[in-house]
Length: 309
Image (cartoon, rainbow, N blue to C red; front, top):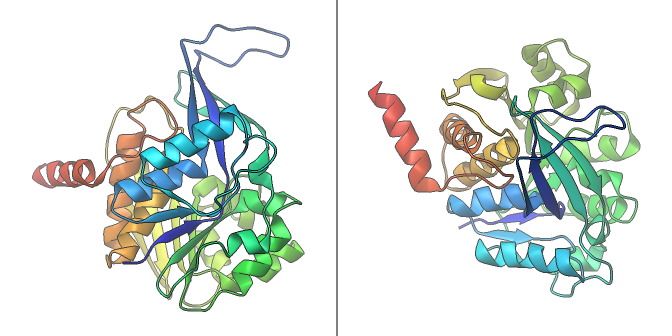
């Protein structure tokens, strides 16, 4: 079976629930607080819980946060591709979720912000595998060029999945211009797609993305509770979401991305994979925390229940 090689960043989230964010200079009391593995871990955990073997091809630190990251990955059965911890510790992110279920982040980059080409070659990518590239990685000077060179050297039999994230805002940088022709699967939320293309709506964004991406690329753009849109070879489809009561949107997009790739790797059509991903994201927002993706059985159950009604 194919595997996912995730080249992004595993960090540790300090997750806090608040009624509202404080004003500048203000102070609020959190209703809860906990340290959780986050960042790229969320996508990997979602994929692993839904039957896809996963390898983490990023650095992990030497310290308390690196220990937490490794423990979390080991607990999910995620293989750590780069064996030796870095000299510095893993980075952290303060993730604040308010009463509307919206979240805000403040991040500090640690060991995961660097990597070398030999480290990326620690695990061989094989035909049919999915290499997951995060837009966050392209912003780290100690990682971006090595990752780009390694990705561009991959055989075409390996699928490159690109998640731009919220900080990659246009296709115009030299690094993006080099990467775009190699992408096989694009996964983002609607805000990211609109910002990247300058489009006023999702359908226009999908049209504009086709200008930058290869002809055969599979695009999936999440649209919150409404589900997602998929687009490939000129055909576009809206895949409806599932109605739930959201309490925390943190990690929902990651759950969607991980389950979507898992579905593709298992031979599902794009529509089937997107429906499963929508179900996973819907269940994820009903739970507190970043890595809240359900496993295969829970996704199956929600899809069955929705078919009854």
